[in-house]
Image (cartoon, rainbow, N blue to C red; front, side, top):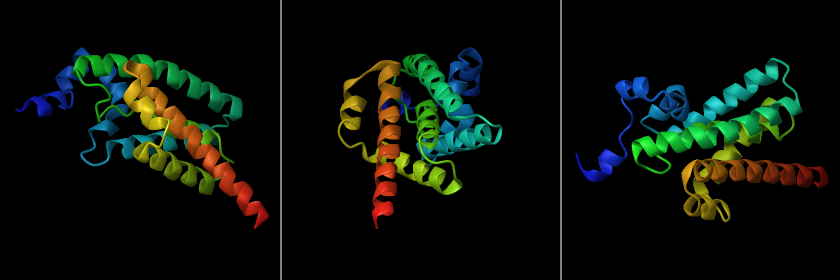
Amino acid sequence: MTAAKQRLRRPSWRDLKRHPVHVLAFGFGTGYSPVAPGTVGSLLGLATFVLADRLGVGFAGHMLASVVGLGAGVAICRRSSAHLGVHDHPGIVWDEIVGCYLACSLVPQSAAWWGAAFGAFRAFDIIKPWPIRAMDHGLRGGLGIMLDDIVAALFAALSLYAVGRLGAFL
């Protein structure tokens, strides 16, 4: 196995037993997706948001969940990436889960807006315009893994707000 493949290995089930933090970091298995694990993790964030919304969680509850997810994510992502020996391993999707959840929390409450929030979040997370790219490359550890996705969620919500305001004038 080459050094690059060794660094990007996904934890085995034996690793999960020894280091259960990978279960959370890898989004309960969504990070194991062979194609677009970040998008699959984001879908889990969307589904979690919709479930919470259907259970009656209001705006304050969604914000609390986002803050708790961010705080926990700093520790979860730091420990998982340290164990794997790779900063921001592609299989670590806790950051996408929390980012998508936050983006959905910040838009009007309807399926169309949630779908738009998901799409805008993924676009900002993949394209990484400034300052998202600077955060992604400049910060290390769990905070570095989490913060670029939080900012991508804020960009997504702000851009959708701007589009919504623009639509009101047309």
